[in-house]
Image (tube, rainbow, N blue to C red; front, side):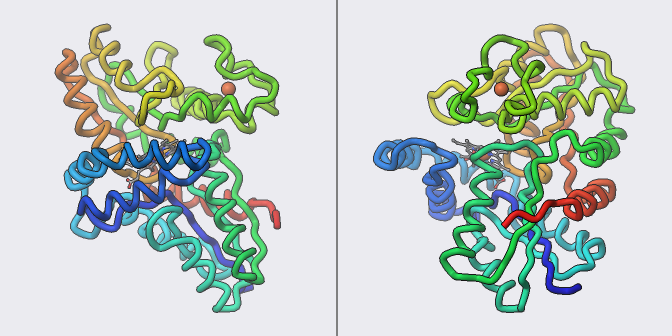
Amino acid sequence: MTDHALLLVNLGSPASTEVADVRSYLNQFLMDPYVVDLPWPVRRLLVSLILIRRPVQSAHAYASIWWPEGSPLVVLSKRLQEAMKSQWTEGPVELAMRYGEPSLDTVLTRLAGQGITQVTLAPLYPQFADSTTTTVIEEAKRVVRERKLPIRFSILPPFFQDPDYIEALADSARPYLEKDFDHLLLSFHGLPERHLRKLDPSNHCLRGPDCCRTASPQVLATCYRAQCMRSAEAFATRMGLRPEQWSVSFQSRLGKDKWIEPYTEARLDELAAQGVKKLLVMCPAFVADCIETLEEIGDRGREQFQEAGGESLELVPCLNCHPSWVAALKRLCERAPQSV
Ligand SMILES: C=CC1=C(C)c2cc3[nH]c(cc4nc(cc5[nH]c(cc1n2)c(C)c5CCC(=O)O)C(CCC(=O)O)=C4C)c(C)c3C=C
Ligand SMILES: [Fe+2]
Ligand SMILES: [Fe+2]
């Protein structure tokens, strides 16, 4: 069969580090109602306020990590796409970005023009969130509906505790964990608490320190925080880490709302104060290194940890194009159930 495409989708980056490009990217990203989930007039006002200062700050941050070939996130996603071509034999392997280019609209329209009728849609997010997984799926469905494309989807579900994903994390992180370290911080992207609450009709989430551990299968299916905890626990178990050797935190908070805790910034100070000298940080919510790992953790986080008394902070690279990840992704995508 050659009419069944694999479509990898990641978040996307600005077209360049120019402030105008960063502003336009942030505007598209933050005006997505799955990301800033407020009524349109409130969202428009809030995002316009954020766009006064943020593009200049973010452009500066992007410039500090940008590669000659472009944004690390996009370059690494393209490399993953290339690696997957030798794995996926049923048709072409394509890459789209939820924000910026190449858009889902461009890629799905091109695939339909080539006679592709079946697409395995792979949002590259291990843990479920409306602001990542849902928005990719809904945008892909919107394009097919509005352009009347004869495409049916299979959709890769969140794979936060899939043994293949955990094994890939273990294989990619092992060389770092074999070196001398005092503590491993697993830092996941954060989310406003509101995003968890609105998907939790049983009112289980964020009610006490153990709520993620006691989440029912129904709660776990949509609770990003509980899924992050499961990923971290499965990884720590696989690596044989003792409880005091690792912990979880959440990074990248934006705005004044309460986001899920503990915050990475606070944990960096606490760990230094507890006497941790050699800190390892890995970021399992990101499958490709990006501004959030390279700049927020690798640059600013390291500086903060050292100023607080730590000696070294080593950033464990994301899965990127690790052979175990490429093999895992092939198996995950082959198992993706047909949906629409
Ligand atoms: C309300 C704001 C945001 C939510 C909610 C959010 C969720 C979320 N994001 C990722 C993954 C990535 N985010 C990245 C960058 C990024 N994220 C936000 C805001 C929210 N994210 C902003 C404003 C930015 C841009 C950078 C900045 O100005 O700080 C990236 C990296 C993009 C890149 O080009 O490198 C990724 C990847 C997840 C997984 C997630 C929810 C779980
Ligand atoms: Fe983000
Ligand atoms: Fe929860």
